[in-house]
Image (cartoon, rainbow over all chains, first blue to last red; front, side, top):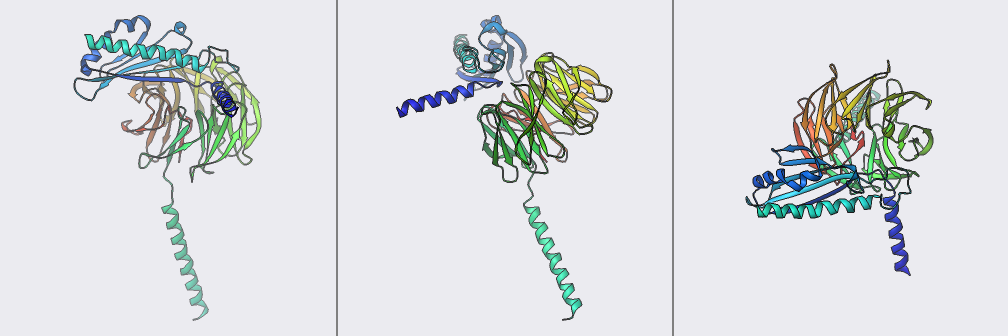
Length: 144
Length: 319
């Protein structure tokens, strides 16, 4: 019983946290690839899958950074802006690809927030893009 | 010992006592500090601006965002949008001395020049809440337009200025909390700054800033970088954070033209400056840091790691 109340309280507490916006959400993940940063950067720039689904905002060769935007209808999130950076790995033949996304939930009005339009749903949806996206990118980079 | 000697000794004694006390005060003098709200980990990073390092990380409510500092009263007000409350900090000890409960999300904060009132935008219910600093509670509220976002107090005219993000307007209230003007801005105005006879809004969606003349009620719109968030001015220059470009637009306020852009950390959001130390400080939401520039030549002095998702929406430097 004690455990049940505790779970209920935790749930209620986390719900009340989620109930309030408007807080931009952040998903940031990295993956290490066995390829030199300069080579990785050249391939990232040409990553075909990437260009199909996103509107590229800018390329920065100096800091090896690509910025892009996503259209609103691509998932249960809005105002999606993200960037991918190629960084040096632990040695010359290794790079770290870091993907950072900033976005909001779709529902921006007063609570209560309809199911599927909250922060948690938005974060989960973006994680499904970033995680597999990085894995796919790693595959492309290491086979080329 | 005659009476004159006694008097003389007494004077010398008090003189020495005075020197002793004032030298002690000098030793305890607190350096200027920046208070950085980290929305991602529910803390405030307190940065010593002389030694350029984080000296304390203070736990506050959930998702801290807005801030205003009272320099004379040595108080800091932090708005927590996750717990719907305000953490009040004593800036001498850097400890929380009070939590003011609200029933709504405090988005941004500002204070009156006499430091008797703190104004808070109530994002969901379209109000400005007025907190009495003496009583440490909400004593009044003003009904305003939709999605009140940025807020600033103009000391020249005693105007309270608020942006309505979703209505593309800025509202100006007088000392009696009466709406005296409502003007159109660019799309999605968020941050607002005011000084002298001007007010400035940063308009996120159309990549512009709107300059408002508070005397003639005229406006002018200037193109800046992508998704500007906030603005501040110093002498004849304006500085605008471009969240998507990771830059600061430098605006010439004589010609109202963008001179150049300088690089910041990732997703720069808000900014404040310290005139005596010649510093301009920018919070970087994306890289969890602040960038500190020399105010004269705008060269980066240092980037300092803070907490997660640093924002500090408001005036965040204690003088």
